Length: 409
Image 1 (cartoon, one colour):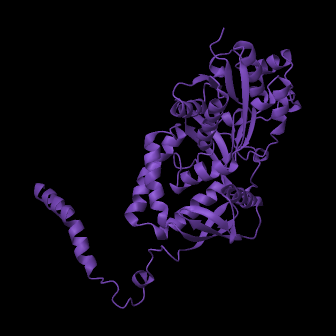
Image 2 (cartoon, rainbow, N blue to C red; image 1 turned 135 degrees about the vertical axis):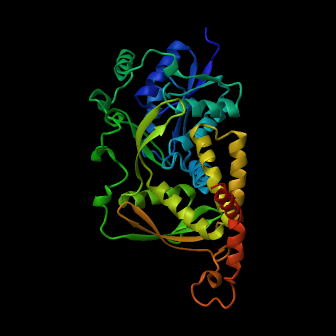
Image 3 (spheres, one colour; image 1 turned 180 degrees about the vertical axis):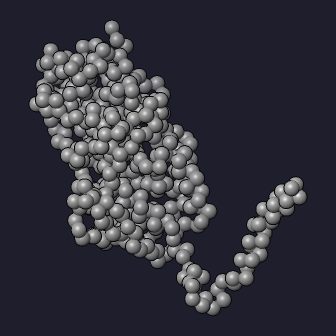
């Protein structure tokens, strides 16, 4: 008899997690609590409730939570305050969703008195690490069930056979082969992996993309927009105040319309393999470009450079599942301190896959002084003779080394 009496399952209602639900009941003979997160993936979530009820889950043990605002406000926006990019390109759309899912799993464990959590991440992927690191950080003694590391249902055919054997409804898309890609979506991005994309030299098929038009098919007329920033976060678009998730939703719409945010990437997974994926992150691409623009006039030079030095470490912490680790929290504290002066507006032009900054201003925190920066007569605001001494002092060590080298000849 299993020691686990009740488990909280991260449940989408799709084939994999529906099989897992039945497998948990049969293998562990335990009570199952289902948790379905609405992170803005754009899918109908109520069918997950119906499927859970079909397999005997009590109505009060079915959790379908709208986490869109918390996701953007408390996870996506803090990440973009750091201008976070992994390996120079990836905006971490999948990675940043996992700590919130882990947090809510543990919340539900505490609420229901469950003994364990269960997730459907495969044994080859990064998500198993992210879910479990988050869970252990928030509840050290929690038990974790990872079916893909226990069962022998390691192919789509075996999953389908198990589903048919146990009366699990199978959508026609699965019977007919389904999507040729493994996809993950939330308000920040949608990712595509597998099958055709497993050849890193094969161009992604155009009909794969769901959120963005091809840049060459985008409108021939540019679109302008203005973003208002308060302490590093966008609070309004074109003068209209919005909640965090509304900001990202609108930027996704605008960016997708103009073919912005496509990425084809071979990334280095921390489980030891290289993996090719394609991503659509239209709103995130706009946010990254705009945030750097407002920081360019509101951050001290050395503070900005320090942030750039720390960003790759911060990105790796998120990618590797350490959102809840003390070093990430410490970095976030520093980053958020720098954002107190990041207030103002950024004007952008969107055109055929490009995000072009056309203006930035801060009425309260701009460090740009036109009386000093001007190429015209600055009326003594800047003494150009000072540059000579500055150059000579910085060149002193170089001159000493060059003289020594010349003597050696």
